[in-house]
Image (cartoon, rainbow, N blue to C red):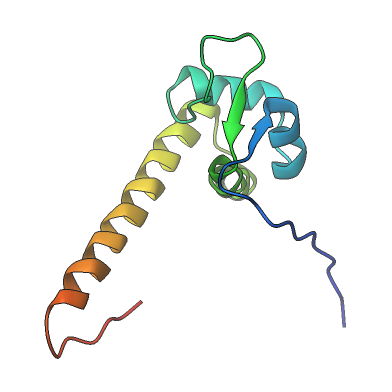
Length: 110
């Protein structure tokens, strides 16, 4: 039996992290993260500054991108498209749950 260790960290929604920290917690190279910013898939809080900072919500998105990169060997452009689609799916699922919660007698499926 193989035991895998993982790190857990509580993310405060108001917190911001640097691109270097984002690269460290996600396992993605900072260069790829910079390309994702150029493609518009990631948006720094302070895009005009030279030292980009990101919301901690980006950690979840970049970890998803990291898994996609490993599983499918995608380049930064394909990763940005995939990330946009994943985020769109999450938004649509949230909207669907909201609509279903307003309809009496409808069970919410995940």
